[in-house]
Length: 408
Image 1 (cartoon, rainbow, N blue to C red):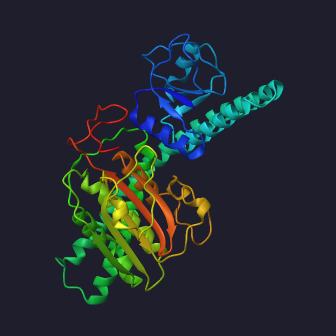
Image 2 (spheres, helix red, strand yellow):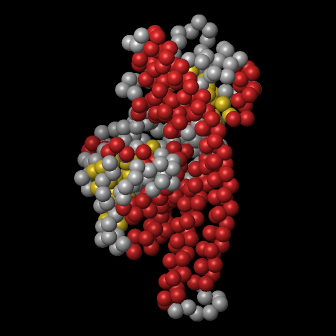
Image 3 (cartoon, rainbow, N blue to C red):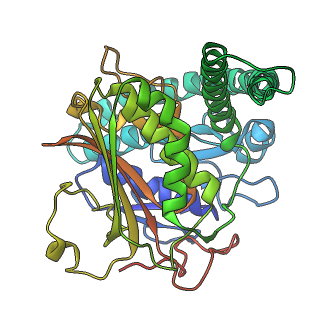
């Protein structure tokens, strides 16, 4: 099966490949070349429309063709395409939206082989109506997101001021404080920092799709990142008497990351684990070099795996596992907890509204890695892998599959 993606966006290529792997039992190949006239047709097409690049052909309105268009370019696209019935997704497209429509397109392709022609026509007409309705919903969603980004940006300033004033009072330049007063100020400062992190996560999720950001990669000491994240969540963990154990193998010099971003990932994972770990519970963090099959995301495995099994292939990534003694995650929601602004309800909802874990996935994905969740005998485990870089930092202008990644 072949998806022909007409785009130079490396992140979009990766997203399509990951989604097709998740939603289809068949092996899909993502091809990026522009199709030539008379060439064999692909099963699916995605056209990343650019105003300064002509469409090779008139827009196709079938369910096998999706067009990614910026909202400001829709009218121009309609004029060039000669139709208003094309299947359009607004850029920047979210993973959830693209997954939904790729799922419909894959299902439509599967049915084309066995379904009667009249039924296919009815189905395609219904699908077209759904896509047109969704286009309006995407426009409303972008308006809401823009408003949210502006509001959160203004919200962060007073939170930073509150935290700063707490720190000023704790340094006692205005007079000595007793122990009870200091404790109250520490709690206030911790709560203000927590709210500030949540606001920062919401802002980053809101603008992250619209602003292409490349991590400023450098050699890092993963221990420094872990220690900083532990310092941040210490008040929360101490209040519940949670025991945290850390076991880190030394990372190689080929592990390049942006330290502040990786610290944010660890803080969010620790924060999530502390939230669901009962009082007097335990959180265990393990870090080690690991072989990750990047093309199929075969990184999942038991927390207590055999070292000989790990060394069966040369490591090409560094893996972090975080296991807590909290309740298991419902198996049907293991992937959903990383979606933006989603939750599955109930007292054991690990998504927390999709803030902390969604920002984890965004950061790890920007670094070329992968994050996932699974249930183990020891408790729920959230893991992520960061690839080694054998030739230095990733080029910002690199191709779809960067040769700087150490892979199979």
